[in-house]
Length: 148
Figure 1 (cartoon, helix red, strand yellow):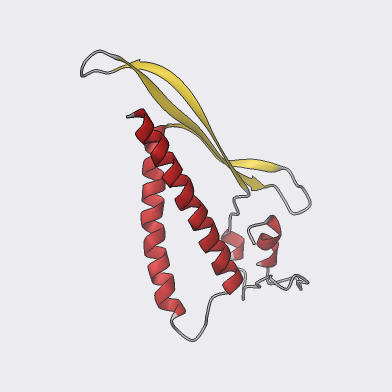
Figure 2: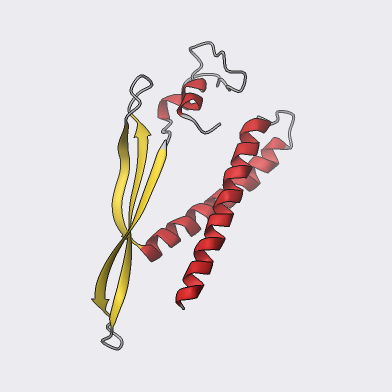
């Protein structure tokens, strides 16, 4: 499912031999589409001083990078987004995106109740990835609880 080939499978101009491909009608969406092929996160630490009690504290940052393929014939990726952000800001981004995703899924469920149904393979892959994210976040929370 979540491979670079799926990005090409969305193009309405070429016949697809992949039975799991989905071709869109028209190219208005495909022309605006960005496919993130990989993500990278790395912990970067610093020491700071807490203003409230003048104690030295560890300050965690996360280097975050999203990569996109440069082209169908070029397997090398390029950076779409790359920044160093505080750990709590990454947690905020995940919370904010998950909140928006909840709304999107509610809307999708309402629309999918109509006569045109979603592609069940893509829906299954989405569910699998969300379950993996849930498990990863539970592990992250457990690690943070050990620190407290």
